[in-house]
Every structure is written in structure tokens, then in C-alpha cells.
Image (cartoon, rainbow, N blue to C red; front, side, top):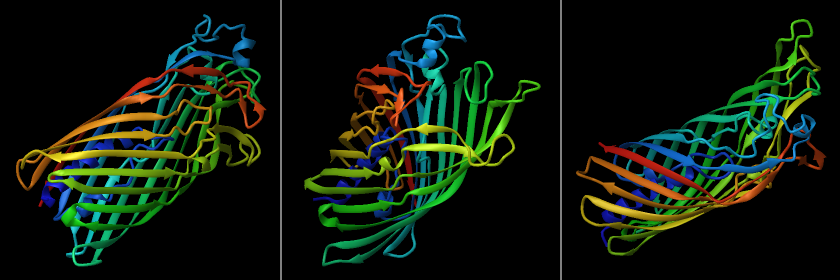
Length: 415
């Protein structure tokens, strides 16, 4: 069996992984990648992934605030709409630069955007009292390393590890009704918080290059943040009626995870591969934002919260790759991602089917194109009761099986 051929197929498999990971559960958009460290020589690659999820909420209602206005939207002066498109398309970039430091030690610097959410329901439905726009953005600047040593005549064992500096930013707008703790009339309040932190990962791998066999197990730590920022236009100046910013803070951690990957040659120029990943999303329940000082309200007073109450995420993927000739290879995958929602959000199970191709005109350059298509499974959401307490701003809705598509392009240069 040609080792070079199955390696190329494996690279296409990694590309398909970027297309499907960009729409994983919770708010993960990009996972850590050690695959480039298994390649020979120095290399730089850049990937851009475009994801277009479609999620339409239907039969929206059940809001106490909506009932208190007689079913008439105070902004549009018309009855509340009962359907809205929730999701927005987005880009996910990723850049890696790998260098061989010795015959057995290699490191790679990497930039990616690990976490993200972007939704916008507008002000036409009662969902605006939960959130109008929500956005989470992030940056990760990391270094991964691999040290290899012989584990037999033809096999190797590797120690994998890395660290990252991460930036996390959260934004939300919400329609505030009369009767809130801060009084006033209908108005849009905004939350804007951010922080920076450090995370790490550690793993191991076993490989038999002659058979293109490789197994890796990697643990990714949680990353702890103390988000700080402001909530604007919630508290009002009693004299002018203008908004007074409230300084807020919140302790939150992005979840730890464990991922197992396996690949092996199954026939000349054919590769089979698969992976299983567990993510500790159930560690995220309610993200509470409290007053950071006593300028407006007493320090430590809970101002608002982001109620998620996720369940753990599981992502299972498998596929095959094939080398056609010295320039062209391709791969196909199927992926199931268990939804993290427990009924408060629309993040249900995802099924994705991917195809990708790799073109390598010479030993120094290659380009890869991959696409994935599938569906977001149907379900219902209901945040009228949260942790046993009635929420006056909550509402109910349902959604069907919705389409999701992704397209990924990668260019790699070796030197």
C-alpha cells in the first residue's frame, strides 16, 4: 500500500472535518487540530469555511408580556408575528504553520475562532423579549507540539500537547417591557462583555505509517473567563429618562472535551477514518450577570442571565478517502452531532453528509475543496419556565427539519 496516497486521502478527511465542526453543538465553531503535526516537512495552510444554517421558528406565542399588550406589538402596532428566521450565515477562518524542530519534535502555531453564535429574530415576534440579537465571537492563538519516539520496528508513539490564549466577547440586545425592575417604557437594552484567558490540551497518539494506521486521544481543558462589560439602556436616569450604563461581570467557563480519532488503510489507495468527541456542555447552565460596582445598584446584584441549561454534546463522524492519481484524491463523510438543547433553545441534533477533493499539482502546493449538507432536526422550545420559575418574558415555539450547508476551501504550501 502507498503510504503517500493514504496520507493525501487523510488530509481531505481533515478538511471535511472543518466543514462539519463549524456547525457543531453548543456554540463551538472550530476544534483544535493536531493532524498537521503528522505530516513530514514544514507547511503553512489556511482554511476558510462558510456555513449557512437555516432555522425557522414557527407558532411562536405563550408570552405573558405579549398577552399583557393584548397581542399587539408595541413597536409595529400590529399583531405579533408567529414565524421568524433565527439563524445567520457565518465564516470560520483557520490558519496553521507547522515546523519540524528535530526528526521527532514538531510544533505548529495556529489561529482559529473556537466559539461563536449569531442569531437575530428582529422585533416582530414575542421572542424579542428573550433576545433580539445574540452574538458570541472569539479568537484563539495557540501552539501545538508533538514528540515522537519508536514503539516497535514499524510503529511510533507520540505525546501531544498545546496551549492557547483566547479572547471571548458576548453581545445581546433585548426588548425591555414596562414593569421591569428598572421601570420605564418599551426600549431596547444591550449587553456587551468580554475577557481573555488561557487553555491547554494534552493527548497521545499511536501510529503505524506503513499501514496508514493512526489513533489519537486528546483532552481539551475548560477555559475560565471573568467576563466584564456593561448593560446599557436598562437603568434610566430619573431626571432625563436616558439610559445609565451598569457595569456587570460574570464567571463562565467554556467546556472541556475529549476526542478520539482513528484511521487506517483498508485497501490500496483507500483509507477509512472516524472520530468520537464528548463535550461537557452540561457544565453551562445559567450565565448570571451581576453588578460589578455600586454606581447604579448594589454590587453583586443579579441584573440578568443567559439561561442555557445545556446537555452534554456528542459528535460521531466516519468516512472513507481514495487516491485516484498523483494529483487527485477525495473523501466522503457522515456526521451526527447530538443537540445540546434541553428545550430552552433550538440547538437540536445535526446530520451532515460531506464530500471533498484534494488537488496537488506538485510537492510544494495543494488546494482542497469540501462541502457538507444536512439538516437540523425538528423540535420545540419553551422558556416560559426556567429552573422551575415562571419567566414573564419567555415564550414557546416549534421548528421543523431545517437545511444546513457548509463550504470549505484550504490552500497549503510546503517548504
